[in-house]
Figure 1 (cartoon, rainbow, N blue to C red):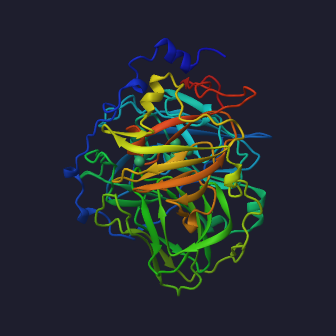
Figure 2 (cartoon, helix red, strand yellow):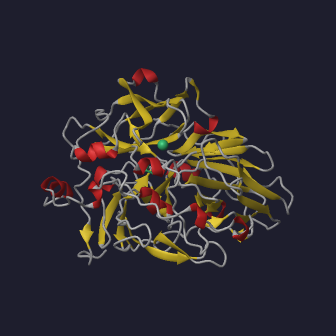
Figure 3 (cartoon, helix red, strand yellow):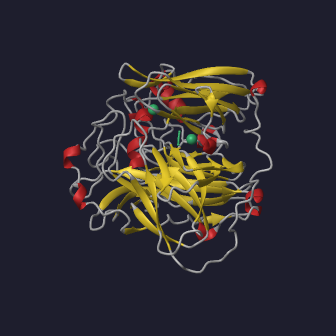
Length: 525
Ligand code: C2O
Ligand code: CU
Ligand code: CU
């Protein structure tokens, strides 16, 4: 192996480069709330048609693998009717194209950074690091924040697709600029299926629908506003579903499977249906639950995925069912955020195939079967605001950078089962905590049972004000992985640290061991 990025960092080749910019100077807020587009010029809720992101098409497939090529480049799109807005897009689409993968068939995705050398208004260098959130990828393909691909470079990411069926998402993770990059559009879903899931015959095809929920704010000319006036988050006054403001979706009188993802920078939601009817939950971040759960409303924290089934059969044609948001505490709210989207029930005929939810969705779930007695140790991770910084156990990503990426919060051995207590005892803020690599089982929140919709494997959990959430997991894999708050403003400033899974047989990989490659491309796919 040649000269790696880590060697370069050791040798000081990148001294002064963006990865080493001290916290606090990395983001220059240019947007001011005063330039905000007046609410009366925003589209009325449910006037814009619903759409789903395109499905990504491989550039090549061979006996074992599907190959994708995804450009990251500016794209001007009409999101607010009558206005043109510049985004940063995966293959020209916001959200990006959905990648459909099958268990046992790896994906190689070439992410090509064709972004400009400087952001036009924010003035930062839009380097990228692509994370497939929900995948147990090797460290060098996990979107390690400091493993950056600069404008004019590309990197090939290898996704093993060995896990059970689940809804994943790929999004940018570039150090200190994840919030801007994701806000501007670098986010998309990735669906992994497996044979057991396919045999269930859940709603499929046009009845299996991604819903990526986000919020945004626009200026008077229709440009995206990125305001850090509020250091706690970036709060939009427009709710977008799949990049459309408050869209209306015509639905047939049958069951739909919705893969709901909160792709917002900071906003969390409490979602419910205007009919008051219960929602059926079939999956969480880490795939299907053992059995469906029901609840009339649920908290959707940043980066969480919930798969739900809504049956529109009971509503007469002409009924409008609104997906509503009663915003949880500690969001900054604006008029309009109480609506997400509408489902307009039609009398269109439909194919009745895949119109059931089986009582048992998974026969075995190794994560949800974990018991406290299996744990070899417990650890505490404290999420706090300290000296003007967001910290994990008093540390930030700068601690990790300053240690030459050696510092870790925890070093479980491969195969160890551990209980982690995630605590946010200080109050005033909420932290959706994400642990890379693993799925975990939420055991308790402040000693009380988890919420019904959390009854499946997860990789993000909301740790609310004055809450301690206990999770249990098994550390398979090896090497260094991030742990951070998924409020991307907290993450970038700098509530992110790492752990290392130690392989006693020495099989560990370095996050910098597959460095990005400059364009022009030497090895075309
Ligand atoms: Cu969805 Cu570390 O990220
Ligand atoms: Cu992740
Ligand atoms: Cu946080």
